[in-house]
Image 1 (cartoon, protein in one colour):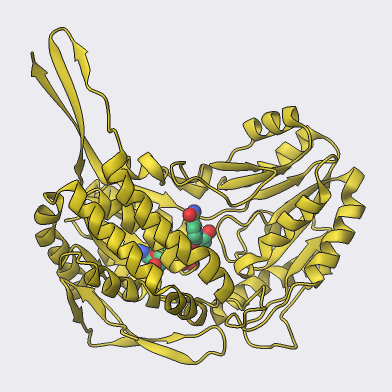
Image 2 (image 1 turned 90 degrees about the vertical axis):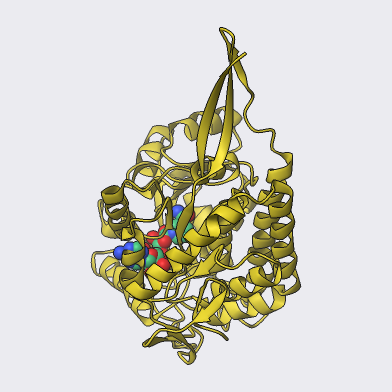
Length: 472
Ligand code: NAD
C-alpha cells in the first residue's frame, strides 16, 4: 500500500515516516510519510498551478471525470472496504454495503449536479439584468477525521472538484490509507495532475501548517471541537472562508407511544462503527412510563450484538481505532461508574477478545451534570435517562453545548412537529435515523459546527458567487 504523499500527480516521500497500526491486532500495516512545511508548500503550489485549467474545463468534462472516479471506486469497492476495515477497524460488511456505495453516490451526485443544476435565475430591474454565477473558489484544503475516512473525504472532495476547484486533502493519521488509494483512482479516471493532492502526516504538524497557509481559498474541516477552534483561528488570521463539521452528543428521545420495535432497533444501531461516528445519538431519553419495557428489550438486543474482527462478515461491532482512543473511552466509563452510574450492558473492555475491543455499554443512574452526559465519548457507550414530560425531554435533549442531530421517536405527529421544532440540532430524524437525501444540508448548531455541507450548500461554500449587472 502506497503511503507517500500524492502531490502534482506524483508520489512524494518525506524524510520521516510514522507507523500506521491496525486496530484489529496492532500490527503496522504501513509506514506513512510524515509531511511538514516543504510538502505543505509543494501541495498548495501544485493545486494552485492546476487550478486555472481545471476551473476552465467545461462542466460536462468535469462531470465525466467525476463519474469516472465513481466508476473506479465502484470497481474497487471490495478492496476499499477491506482496506478501511484493516486501517480503521470499521466492519467490512458496513464498509462494502453502506460507506463505499455512499462514496460512489457522492461523486455521481455532484457530477450530475453540474449538468442538471439550473443555477440562479437572472433578476431584471430598472432596465438592468443581474446575472448571478457560481465561480470556482480556488485552492481548497480539506481535512478529515479518522472515522468513515473515505466517505467523509468524498463528501468534500466531490463538490470541491465539481465546482472547478483544486484540492489538498489531509486525511487523519490513524486511517490514512483509503485517501491514498483515492488519489490513484482519480488519476486513472483522468483527473489532471495537481487537481487532487493528498498530504499525509501527523495532524497538528501537517494540519496546522496547512490551515495557516496564506494561499488557500477555502478550508473545510471535519473533526473535533478542540481542533476546530484552532482551524477557525488559523483561517481567521488569513480571512480564509472555513466550514467546520464538529462533534456531537446527540439525544434519542423515546416517547410513550413510540413504536418500541423501531425504537430498540434505532437505539441499538447507535453502536454502529463501535460508536465512533459523529451522528451517534448516545443519550437515550425515555418516557418513564415505558422505561422498564424499553430497557429490558434494549439490553436483550444489545447483548446479541456480535463483537469481533471487523473483517468477519458476521461482526456487528469492531474495535476502537487506537490505544489512545480506547483509553479515553475507558476513562469516561470508569469515572462514570466511580461516580455512581450502573452499567446495564457492558461496562468495560471486552476481556474475551482483548486488544481494542470495548463492550457495547449502556449506563444509567448518572449524577446530574456528570461529564458522560455532556462530553462526546465517541465510543460504544450510551447513557439512559428518563423523563416525565415533553418539556423536560426537550430541556434534557438541548442540555449540552453540542447540536449536531437528534432522533425523535413518537406515534404522535403533532408531538413530532412540536419537539423537532424545539430541538437545537442541524438534523432531526423523526421515527428514522441516518438517512439523508444528498440534496439536503448537513451540519451542526452550537459547538457542533459552522455552516452546512450537502447539495447546493456545498456549492455555495466551494464557489464564489458573482453578480454581473448589465444595462439592457
Ligand atoms: P481531530 O480533530 O483530532 O482530527 C481531525 C483532523 O484534523 C485530522 O486529520 C487531524 O490530523 C487534523 N488536525 C489535527 N490537529 C490539527 C490542527 N491543529 N490543524 C489542522 N488540522 C489538524 O478529530 P478526530 O479525532 O480525527 O475525529 C473525531 C472527531 O470528529 C469527533 O469529535 C467527531 O464527532 C468529529 N466528526 C464530526 C463529523 C461531522 O460531520 N460533524 C463527522 C465525523 C467526525
